[in-house]
Image (tube, rainbow, N blue to C red; front, side, top):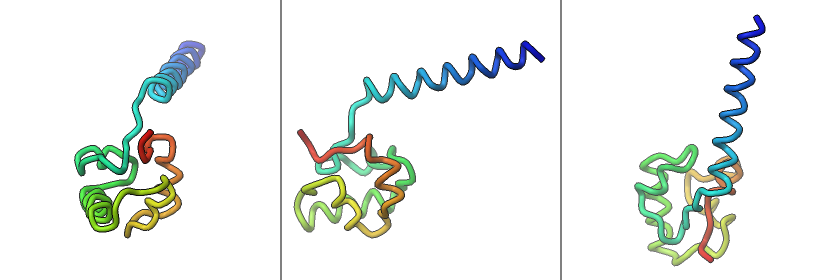
Length: 91
């Protein structure tokens, strides 16, 4: 039983470290320049939604804020909140 607890603790530590490393070293996806292939790497964004993001951007110009992403059909608050730390509108 002690071995199981140690293994689970180490597994949790490793997962926590991976999350921290991504947050510190991962680059954000610029929703004003990202391709469909880049956008599908976001949580809960598939091919169709990614294509809608690109189409919306091409029709309406660049997004002024990350929150503007909710103007795209299929993107709601939940998807925005889930991806907020992974997206930007540029520097």
